[in-house]
Image 1 (cartoon, rainbow, N blue to C red):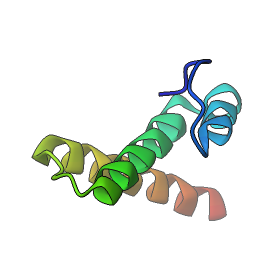
Image 2 (image 1 turned 45 degrees about the vertical axis):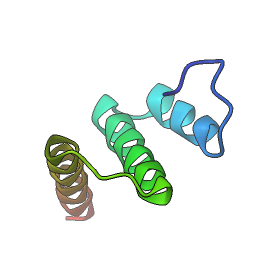
Image 3 (image 1 turned 180 degrees about the vertical axis):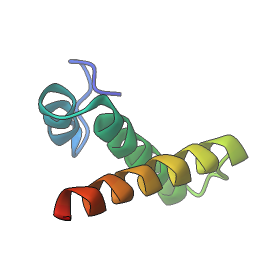
Length: 69
């Protein structure tokens, strides 16, 4: 998804997150991008994709809350 030969909108930001932040954050952002792409194309999400998305988004939200405390 972030390989050098990929050239879609937002790939540079995903690469930046991958190299400068946590793997969890990068994975979460990649999942967000994938879900958005699939929804724009009108494709159905697999249950496990939706579950992974929900899990990692919630996990990132909890980390953000902890940092603000």
